[in-house]
Image 1 (tube, helix red, strand yellow):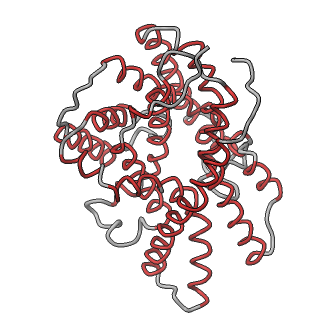
Image 2 (image 1 turned 30 degrees about the vertical axis):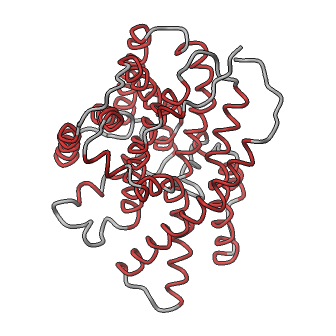
Image 3 (image 1 turned 180 degrees about the horizontal axis):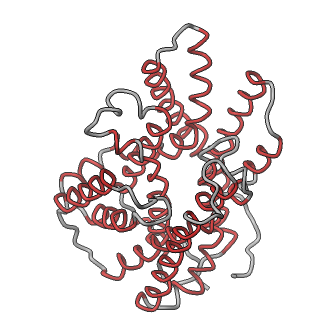
Length: 362
């Protein structure tokens, strides 16, 4: 039996840089949407809705999983999960540790249940705790669900059925999930934010499964074309990004956090993947690739870094909101870089070398 290994030849660094855009936009959404220049009228609507970047992460994750593993053979379950764990958990654990120290030293208290659920990546499964402790961690709990599901999906469906056979059930699941979301958010079930019903509709892993599946489908479609020649898609990308901006500017009806933006995110991903124009050359610069690589650290370390920076700056009488934001942002970029070089990469390589007995395929 042939065991899958990631397809390194299909790696597209220009997609890596798009993660940085999504991550830094989410940071601005949390801390800087009332800071210059992000509050100015021409762009404020983008950053006030920049949490849609999480939806982009989910779809992109599904896409790159297919690109990395779609060869003949089967995925060995434990080895795959070990590799995914090695990718996300070291920095995730670092964020929890740094935040835990903050709560103990500064606030003198913390919620034990929240910490346990965060450590075990179960917070999104328990209504009322999805945004507990390290808030962005809810999406990592969702991602872990995707990782656990992917080998089964791949071995039993993606590796056995044609793209046409998979198209209908995945699109059908997408439509059902959208209708269920719209129905429940407008029913008496939904109590608004914050509430347990909000946690179920917005953060529960199954509510985002359609995004991962759509990313998988996009990856399968991308490989099905077997397009070896790249093309200059700069203008196409700008057009789709313009459509996204118009949608965000004038949208007053639709909630965009449950996969609906796949209509623009999937074209952006696929056009970026085949692009060889100016945008691709820019995104492939070493500094851009590095920023893309540290984007995960930027995303998951934002809460502990900003809490520590705010406390330290207040003690030295720096309380101006703009100054606090930009000092914290620079500190976050430095912390994420150091974390990537000295925590994330070494520990990921160490965990990958762990010998674990192979388990039967599921």
